[in-house]
Image 1 (cartoon, rainbow, N blue to C red):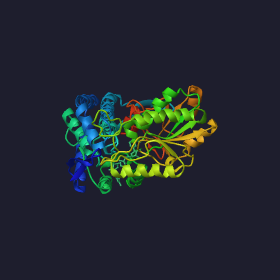
Image 2: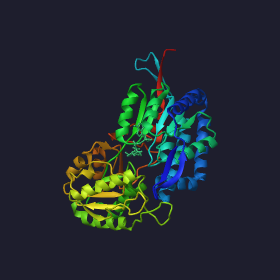
Image 3: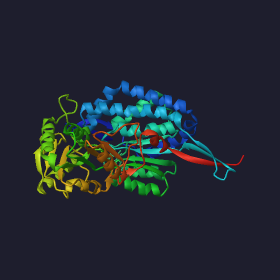
Image 4: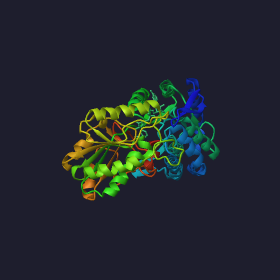
Length: 457
Ligand code: NAD
């Protein structure tokens, strides 16, 4: 059995069955057997099932949000927002299911015809992280089902209860047996590898760390499996001296503190122009110091604990090293002194450009502020990491903002905004942050193959 722990107390929330490798392979077999019939359903039928799943999920918003908070730790407001975001993928891809297009063209030589059609890739293996246990699952399941693929979802073992609840919703919405299976396996490596080796999986869609993603890419390469990778981030957030500081502070709070900092999109490196640095640091410190850390189910709490003791210790070590390297904590800077896995919201000032904390994903409520003088250097500073998921820019000069948006090596940019996630937008990164996009029409294309018929008639 796998124990699911409430990170607010370190206590047991529930237990789930730990799937053996043969059970994981049986789920792949079931997906493989269900594929021909599911592929043959009409796009409208698939769309309506997804629409029903959206409605059922929203009808259970509160119940699901409480479950997310209990196993993940995020505060209830974040959990409710996650359920709405997650459900929206069912609605969006329910609408996209009827928009699988093709193409019909005359060849340039004028003699032949080119007919292009799209077909579902086949059985898809989906692996998701603990930080958005509902939304990362629906962001994959919804486009896969819309495209006509069948799936096996392997959620993170820290947060399996939400994934299983999503599975139940899909069943109630009318998804036939075998089309969606959920297998929770710990350790995950052997189970995922066996499923990739089964010869029946044609698509791997993974969200998680760059380390695991690149290992799985290497494994999938053996069988030339189609891969989509949503990996880690290390987002720069740039505040120019002409920024509207009210907007910049609000955007920074969102970009940093959504999900208690445990988001791939979290602002990790805050570059602030020297002319506004002190005021920005003071105002951000005031806001962060007001946040109350505690059990996410308590409505007076603004920040929940991190997901595990290991994660708490990792964040604490990053902050201690930063302090050792000369940074100053203007608020926070310590772990919770109770049994929870909490870490106090922290602002670090005087962070040097080469500080270690800027080199890795923090994944916690810590905002390191770096002072910059010359705006011409900001592209180089921002791009100086292996990751390239998202960046944030705050300036009143839209021309400057757009020039920077073009120059930054990230898949997404927030311009005077601290939140980019939207099911209707293509979400994804460049460099070590991943391959492919989720959401938007692009998310559907990730589960479709293009077939071309060269005709002469
Ligand atoms: P993780 O890589 O440890 O785990 C992700 C998934 O992979 C889980 O299901 C896990 O069980 C599985 N896994 C772990 N080791 C494996 C192995 N050896 N073989 C096969 N599967 C394995 O990541 P995490 O700690 O759960 O999540 C945090 C990471 O996810 C962060 O780096 C974050 O940036 C990233 N993330 C990215 C996005 C995005 O859209 N780009 C979204 C959310 C999270």
